[in-house]
Image 1 (cartoon, rainbow, N blue to C red):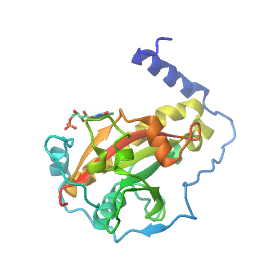
Image 2: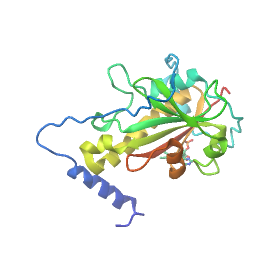
Image 3: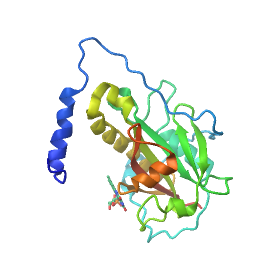
Image 4: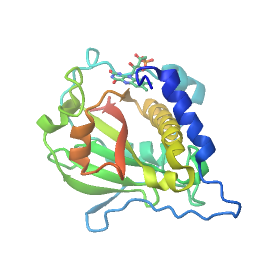
Length: 239
Ligand SMILES: Cc1cc2nc3c(=O)[nH]c(=O)nc-3n(C[C@H](O)[C@H](O)[C@H](O)COP(=O)(O)O)c2cc1C
């Protein structure tokens, strides 16, 4: 197979659909949300309703350009991150989320990296979609943040959300086809983030070309359980 041919790769992945679990009896699949119960839990403030018109927000969305926005480092306001995550990705009381998930198995995990309001240094956090809390993982440094993406993006001067896939959540039902479904789901989720960020005057840029090894090391995640999929730079314009 020619791995530089996207059409060949696509056919290969699509064929996995036919080999996915097809037992005659209906199956119940167990899913869990990743959690860090021993880490400090940062309860986020109330989620505000976004007032912006959807068509205005879609029209206004564009990628942050480092050239346009040489910004000092600053902390991310708690009410902004709460409203951003609460509208874009948090679980609703009935368990549904604002983006679809193949088989409802929710393989995507969300991490925030940056300096939160009241904090003195950048840290990595895991976002609990069910509890609307940021679970504080550990400190990082501006130098470490700049290794996460290529040199044209100085992440140390901004903040980021990182989307990962816990493959097993989805592969228990779909086998290797979970790969295809997880990528699509991350895209749905990311678009919600970009639109909510735009509505909150937070600039953003998605990055596919991040440094997998540096991101996995920072988050202490390991393949084959969990891999990073997508990197979203966030830069509030109110700092
Ligand atoms: C899947 C995907 C991956 C991307 N990866 C990168 C990236 O690695 N580095 C980067 O600077 N921009 C990346 N971008 C952002 C695009 O360069 C940007 O969306 C494009 O230039 C169009 O500009 P706009 O977003 O302002 O409309 C990516 C966008 C998408 C959809």
